[in-house]
Length: 386
Image 1: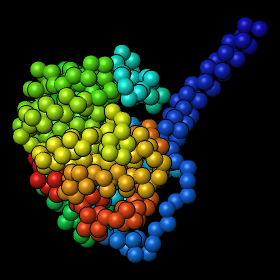
Image 2: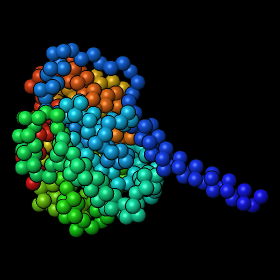
Image 3: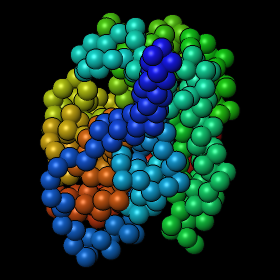
Image 4: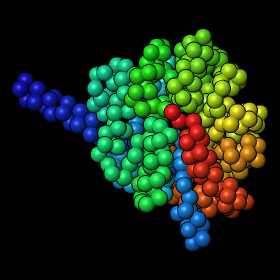
């Protein structure tokens, strides 16, 4: 009887572990990164032709978080290399999340718990990645580098010269994609600015001071104190500029945004956001902030998810973009989808042509559409990457 009970217990344990490690990661990915219900927008033949001629750049995807082999096509989530290429995306920002609290909300989050740890356990991350926020950033960077090393249709961009070489190659073959590495939250520094050199060596070229909670660097719009730059944060801004790294103010508090703009000598990016003019919440930027970022030469990436645009349709995204263009100017607005960022979106990567149609329907000119869909980011990086 005891032997039978032990056998049954072990069998149950094996089944539970198999479900946890084999089923849970895919299930969470499928649920978290869904497509909003609704009929697809009809794209005219002329707009389809226009879309194919665009250079499309998206500033923010969290695809590295979910354990997919991005060289393969999937039926879950929003992106992978085949789907990005299918959507004619030319340049994708791959953002890395190292820590997110449970009970995530827009108002107030502390850093006392760690949802990413349990996602890492389910994906069998190494003990180094599970135990260290820097280790998680290192793991993600190595994954993207391995993808670039193994794929002939994917380029990893670390410098202006890398980007120019890719652009020259793309003139010959449009069925290729480039990516660059960004970090969502400076908590991965673990309070040590020496780690900035290590992150740079790993390929990171843009870092946000905060994500959903206040860090040793600065206050978050969704943190507890919501303060500005700390003394370490002011050193961080100077160090970032010395290394020609780009500051991303997505999720930053109002005070952090103001203080970074005041002390920085280089333009900044807000990689994924909405605008209060079409969707008034503390996640989104005010008209004053839009103008201030544009005056510094910066770029504002408009997100695709409902909290960013107060709508479930691609037309809502186009409406937010049109508004931002009207306030900040057509040279300063871009795409910041937040694909695979644990959000639902009305389109995934292969359906980007629907956004081109919506932007045209919203009254934007073809010239403005080309800038917003990717030329602004391309030109910015050609000027400000190392």
